[in-house]
Image 1: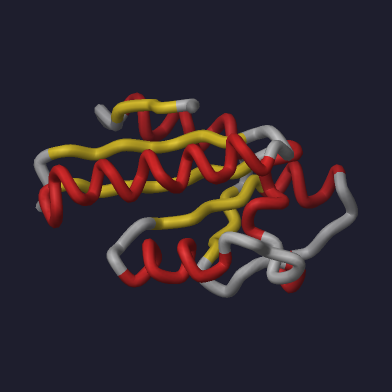
Image 2: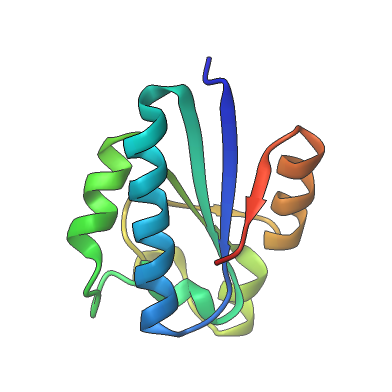
Length: 115
């Protein structure tokens, strides 16, 4: 069981913000190795980070997923944008509510980071 747990939150459509969050995750894994659990939650406009195509970050996301990073999408955001899971990378899972996921994780002691 990992000593540290962190959830990153992205809700913007900014490519710069998406790159920043992925670099932050890479840096954290480099520092803590297997001693950290990491989840990236995307909601609102941030769900674009996990589109199948176009996706400039697919290679990085795939690598991070293979290192144990969990990628989650907000079902409410998908519904509001008339999208289904099929539009997104396979490693992404859907949670009922992005805000609810944040509350659950923070209540369980996970650190919250929103770059």
